Each structure stands twice: as C-alpha cells, then as structure tokens.
Length: 245
Image (cartoon, rainbow, N blue to C red):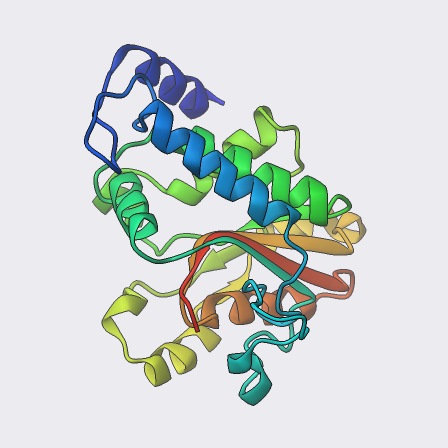
C-alpha cells in the first residue's frame, strides 16, 4: 500500500510528456487523446469474444482456434488466456516507457485494465503474479508486476496471493526460443512459506498476471507448478500484451 500511495502522490506532482506522441501530459504520462484511444482499444478488446481458445489472440474469422495454435497449441495446460493488446507499434513504445523509461504512473492505468479483464472473465479467480528474477528489484529498483498487484489488491479489491517464486537469474530475452522453453521448465517453484501457511485454503482457480506474453513459456511453466498442488484445479492467465503469432 505504501508503494501504491507513493506512486500516486509522485504522479500528482510530476508532469511528464506523453510516452506515445511526446505531447504535453499531466500526472499520467499519456496525453488526453492517446489515453482516449487506448481506453477505446481496451474496451473493444474486453468486448471482443472472437478469440483463440488456446492463446487468447483476437481472431479475424469465426474459427475458435488461430492459425498458429492449429499447428502448435500454445497453452495446452492453461484453462484460459486473455491478453489485452497485440505487442506491436505503439504498444512496444508504451511498454518500453513504463518498464525502461520508469514511467511508474502508467501502472495505475494498466492495473485498471487488468482489473476489468479479471472481473469480467475470471471473477472467481485469485490473482497469482508472475514473480521477478532474483535480484531484479535490487538491479532495476522495482518490480512492475508487484506494483500492478498492489493496485489490484488495494484499489480494485481483488485477492492476490504470491504463490510462486523464481529460481534463476538469467533474462529469457537473451535465449533462443528453444532455450527459453527448456529454461522455463525449471525456473519457477511454489513458495512453500506461502502455500504452507495457506494449507487447504489454497484457491481452486487462479489467474496468472504478467505484462507481456512472448513465447508463452512463462505462463506454461507457472501453470504446471500451480497444478501440481492438491487444491488448484484451474489456471488462467491475463496479460497486457501478447506478441503476434
């Protein structure tokens, strides 16, 4: 809660240019027009039920499976995936401004979008954030998924349980697609301190929350770990962005 309030108050007093067009913006690093267009796109995505049943990408036709997943289903062990935006063009700029440009005030907007996804599509689920690499916070100063989780908890009143922890330190973006797949299988594990304290109160349905889905290896690996428990029966995933197939 402290970090949420700190982010809120810093956003109130620090004005930054729009991360998309460079024009003047207020406490949020988006001008009114770019914010309006992004809100409209998010609302449209939430209402669009023509999505691949495997990866959640929007469909151009009425088929329930996208062309990529017809040949190689991306999430066979996941019960539902909902990414909001395709990771292209302005969305790359938006994510870069947030994560690398440290425009922390964008977290408020992103958390609101994900809260709508969760409440609309997974209302019975408990959020499980994808954990950061060990040492990430020390190196970069913040964990954007944890900040989103704090907003989901304290602003949008969604239950969050930090059930997972990450066991490796190498950044997956430095690996090939094949290397990522093998690496992810051993990169996550159940946080025994949290799961042990919860015992039989572990939720039956959880929704993983992450910023961007690239190969899908992270979501699959986390889902495998969660489904190895005796209580979690269903694992879904919500993300801001997904790389086109």
